Image (cartoon, rainbow, N blue to C red; front, top):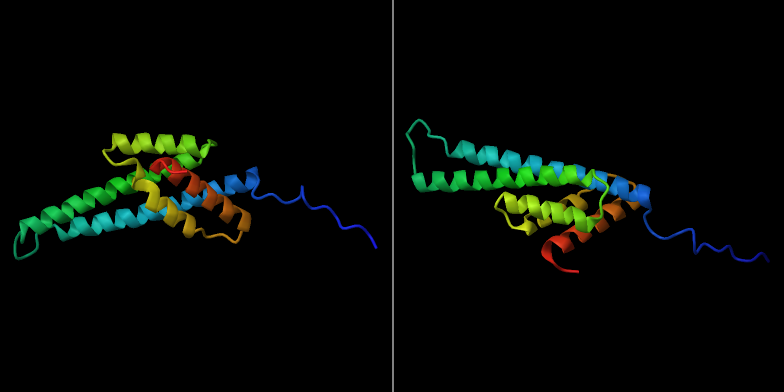
Length: 149
């Protein structure tokens, strides 16, 4: 009988190309999340517009406008993070830059965590290594944003 082939060095997880593809699909997922938030912001703004009966309940309109502004800001942050993922940086450095952007916008650094997780779960590719890389990248950035390891 022939000896068993040694595959120890042949497998080891996603490589650099896979992480580049993972970052690309994660960025595309963030763009999708941003689109959803922008659509929600537009719908909320539309509900605050006066109708034929007049202004209506001012408290509800203020609440809708506040929620619309929050959704629009989160959409802008998601788009900025998607652009940052196009740069070849370590996840900790990307998280640092995302946190700086969020802080300048008046949002907590962890604001992007749910969007990153949703983007990683909604990866639209059959490339298994890219899916793993996207999930790993999202987890690393989320951990850095929340201060957990």
